[in-house]
Image (cartoon, rainbow, N blue to C red; front, side):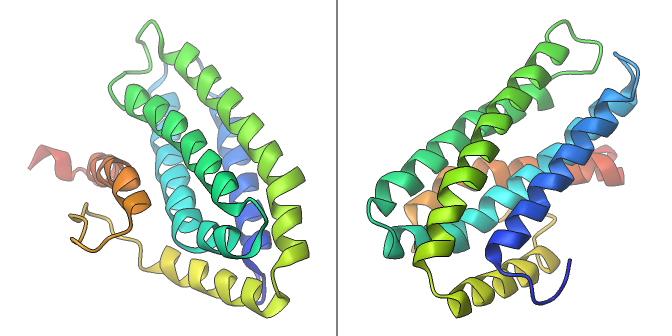
Length: 186
C-alpha cells in the first residue's frame, strides 16, 4: 500500500485482501486444516478492519454526512452480525457439520456489506469529507495496523460505547493469534 493512500483506498485494499483470503480458502480441500487456518486469518483481518473503521472512518461519517449517525450505526450492526459468525466459526473445526455453511453465511454477509460500503458509503465520504482529512485518516489507519495489539486489552472506562461493542472481537483476535503462534498450549 502506498504511503499516500487515503482512508478509502486503505479500506478498499483491505476488502481486496479479504477477497484473496476467500479465494485461497476455496482452493483448499473441504475439511482440511488449511480451511480453518484461512478462517483464522480472515478473522484477524476482519476484526482489524472493523476496528480501524470504528475508530477512524465512522466518526468522520457521523461528523460529515447527513444521516451519518444512522449510516455508522448500520455499519456497526453489520459488523455485529459478522462478528457473531466469526465467533461461531472459532468454535468449529473444519470437519464440523456446519463449518462450510457458516463460511458461506460469512461470505454472503461480507459481500453485501462490502458492496454497500464501496458503492454508497465510501462515495459519500469521498464527496463530503475534505481530501486532507481523508489522507490523515488513511495515515492513522496505517499506523494503527502497525501497532495493533496481539493480546486482548480491557476497555478503558472512558472508551466509546462502540469500542465496547467490538471488544469481544479484540479478544477473538488475541485467541486466534495465540493459536497461530502456538501460545495456546502454554
